[in-house]
Length: 72
Image (cartoon, rainbow, N blue to C red; front, side, top):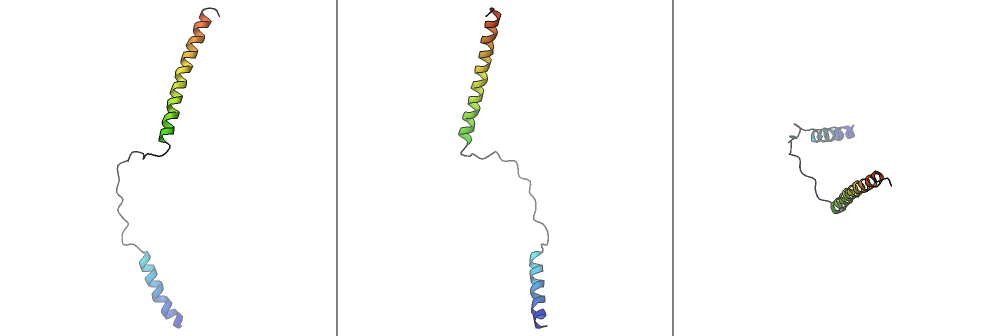
């Protein structure tokens, strides 16, 4: 019985401490740009390489077409 006399007020305090009066405000923040990472330079280099490959592929296609048009 003595345990219940001490446990009841402690339980009430713990439950009261866990409850919130109102939820915290939700502020809509504007979208922030992506932060820089250590991979940014690598990603830029990869994109540049892909763009160069597209250019090479276009030139290769043009060369093949010219050869085919000449009867080669």
